[in-house]
Length: 175
Image: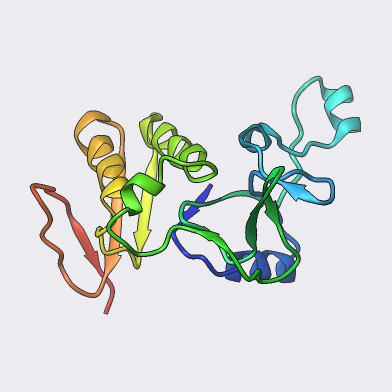
């Protein structure tokens, strides 16, 4: 699972280049509309599943959760649609004072709920790269995991040590 606040499509471009399949909350049909239930799908080999009586997952698949939206998402009368290229009115959470409130709207709410659910699971490892902990809605979910989940592991990769509101963390420095 990959959770990102980036709006760009670099993860999608890299996945396409390397032959990965992304489950991103959008339908597998066209036009691609967002529905949270799409995150519950996976891709398996049918023949192997029937022969072995167990799930046989296709490799190179990952879930992509874009917590702040994307430059290729747009709202229309039917919901959130993924465009084939950058749109004029992207469905994203802009850096602003109402960022926290915006995170309670769809599709962001669904992805934040999945993020929180993931951090509550046993033996979860969250690797944070390039995130400054300025987004209160994300910061609160991570804080809750640190203090409430005894089997939660957090690695923060940064060039500087960041002291934040009572978070007692070990920082791994990359130079």
